Image (cartoon, rainbow, N blue to C red):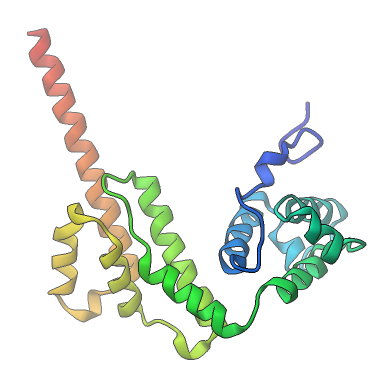
Length: 209
C-alpha cells in the first residue's frame, strides 16, 4: 500500500492553487514555503536536505506551481530544488522596493471574515505573523514591533471581536503582543462555540419535553 508521500502521492497535494508570475512572487513564495513545510520538503528547497527522494519531491512541487514557459526558460536542466528556488527568485522577485511595498500592502489590508472558524482565525493570524517576518527579512529597518503587529492583528479582526479590541487598545501597552491577541481571540471563539452548543442542547431538550 502506498502512502501520500510515495508513489501514490497525488499531484494536487503539492499545488498551492496558483502559478508564479512577475506580479505575485511574494505571495507565491510564501504559499510555497507553507506547502513545502507541511509536505516535509522545505529543507530540500533551502538546501539543508540532500536526500534524493526529498529533492525529487521538492522539484516536483516547484514544477507543478509554475507555468510551462518558466519550466523551459528557467528550470530546464536544474535538478537541485535549492538551485531552482534561487533561479526563480532571481527571475521573478523584482526589486526589493517592490517586494517591500507588496508585503506592506498585504499585511495592512488583511481582514478576517465575520463568523470565521477557530481554524480560519488561527491561519489568518499565522499568515499576518509570517508576512511581518518576511517584511523584516526584506528590509530589517522595517521590522515591526510586537505592539505594531498586535495592533494590525486587532484591526484585521471583524466586529464581533470588539471586546478584545477594547481590552488591548485601552489597556497596558505591555500586554499588546501578537501571542496575547491570538490567545484571546481563540478563547473567545471557544466560548462562543460552547455557548452555541449549550443553546442547541437546551433547544433539543425543550422540543423533547
